[in-house]
Image (tube, rainbow, N blue to C red; front, side):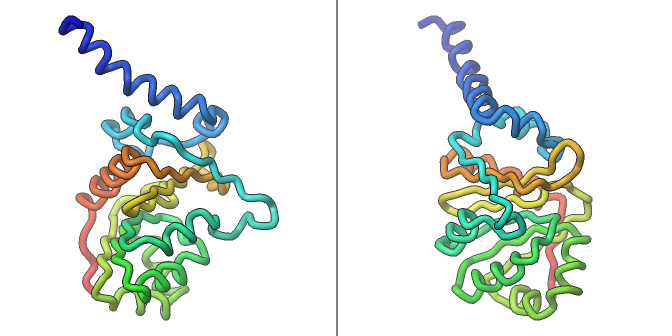
Length: 196
């Protein structure tokens, strides 16, 4: 293959991966607000790889998805970004900490204040643990939740109307873990460490 041919093939894979990710659930992707993704990572959306679209039934609409909870509880390390405080999150994160899971929590200041005021017991347990790092993000970022462990990533985007509609994705692909970790690193670099 010629050098030009190699360049074309090298650039074709990311395009095909992105097309496959979008085509797999086109209705989902065209209704997501992806402006929270840094440009260089938005262009690599195809790295999400194979994923499951989680759409809870009406009876479980306001519960954390079982797929997320079960996988998080089996993890040894969890890095997460939250700007939205789901009522079950504080007790889940406290449970993780009590199990000895290493937790890196990147959180917007508004969400942090909500956690401190509405879930003081859980936040005390989380923030006083030696295996927890908390970073406060000064920006108002409309990314409800992003979690990455050693073996799965979980993503929640708002829809284009700015609402959280409980449709999330989970991926176990290595490329998705690396891509999601880069998103967390990007926002962590723009945040400050919280010292209790």
